Amino acid sequence: MSARAQPTVAERVPREAGSPERTRDEEAFNPKRLSLQATPPDAILVWAVLALTGLGLVMIYSASAVAARQRLGDEFFYLKR
Image (tube, rainbow, N blue to C red; front, side, top):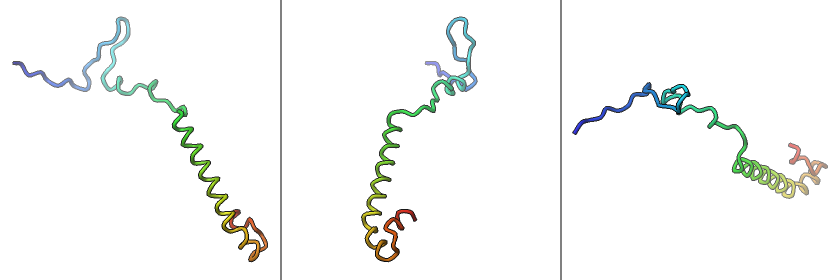
């Protein structure tokens, strides 16, 4: 039984006929695989954050509008602050 040595990082990876060879590091870092486009889960997350922020603003206004109007004369004081 022969022991096979582990391949080194600089070992060449065979490519298709006519294309240049690339190292394993170059194979691992493929800029085409790295995409900065928004994917559907990202869009869902953005909408969830916006909805929760809006709900929080409504809750702040509804909880403080009457007290702010009586004490400060501006029912939107705490919302603007």
